[in-house]
Amino acid sequence: MRPALPPELRPARAVVRRSAGSWTLQSTLQRHGLGPVAGVDEAGRGACAGPLVVAACVLRPGDAKRLDGLTDSKLLTPAAREGYYALITRWAQDSAVVVIPPEEVDRRGVHVANIEGMRRAVAGLADRPGYVLTDGFAVRGFGSPALAVPKGDQVAACVAAASVLAKVTRDRIMVALHDEFPEYGFAEHKGYCTTVHDAALTEHGPSRVHRFSFVNVRAARGDVGIPVGVGGGVVGAAVEDDDDVAALEAAAAVGLPTALVHNGTVTVGPTEVGAEGGMEP
Image (cartoon, rainbow, N blue to C red):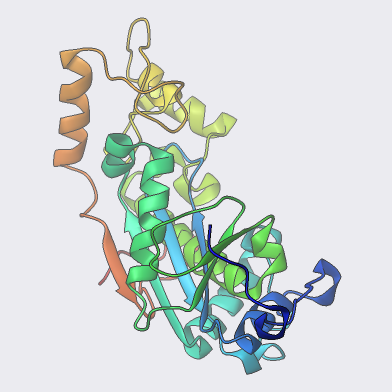
């Protein structure tokens, strides 16, 4: 055990109250010499189709007024998310977005893919952050001190900014996939497990962009005695037979591109239904 510092050498204790606003935690860390502060968040963790998208974002300390009202992307309207996305990509000090295709989610499991995506997003920043804030659960391996913040996308502006980058990027990808697979209604539910999506899965079967480790996707494929999958919406962690392995390999062979790390804007087209889109590095 390391000896405690004498009182005169200890830094002043900082108390950050939730009611002080979403910029307070970041500002406090900056004042104590722990900046730049990066926020990290993901979109698509619970979806059974499409990629998992993870973003890291560093905001400039003086941009609180410019980004007034920024909060968890799920609490914003689509139009508001698009507006903040434009502001964030223009004014953020640094940002990176990682797109993890469904076959990688199947292969590694949602949680492992998410954690690794967070590390890759932080590694993709132009400058190493002095501190990293994550939403909800602790993550190690950033190469910088990190803190898990409960409801971080509502408490820390940089986490909220990362959530907007991840959400808008993923929504645009799902709208582009809707053009290719209109029968599933991706533009409406963005690949999440809804009644409409489940009905489309039952009628048409899964596509190459579905996550075959999710139990509803496996059921739609017509598996008998659905075995335990490798993560996500499935309990446990085993692919049991050769047909399962072959199906996952086939999905990987025709799936989305290998996960990409982007610095700056990810140009994938607008989120309106029927608009052109796609992923560009």
